[in-house]
Length: 175
Image (cartoon, rainbow, N blue to C red):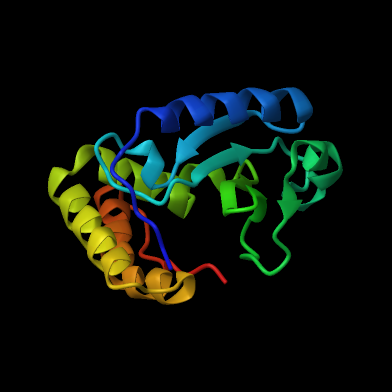
């Protein structure tokens, strides 16, 4: 069952803590790290999982970072998307952080960053997405059903933002 909580001011603090640890562990292997996902949007209810996005410099494979961050508890999510690397960290309750790692060329238009930007500047999109998340969590949906049911709205909002930037429309599902 999915738990969606009201926005917490602790989420940006958790992001900063993890970002600092990852920057030290990945010195010269990443050139930027940002808070993405619902916990990055002030006022938005979310699963209490911190999503981070990192950019690698040219010549660094995003899928090669596990040896440098496994001491922090991050593991490569081998069944994740093929468009970028995903590393997860958790505890006995489940995932606590998800690190998305992109090449420098994929960084500017990565879905996670573009979608975050849409939610940050569009109050109507933020309200619609928040209401949907709370409703789905209240229905008792499991993880995959919850994600699949959100996909139509994510697709719509992602492509609205991409169109506003003059970018081609894309499939939001990256598997």
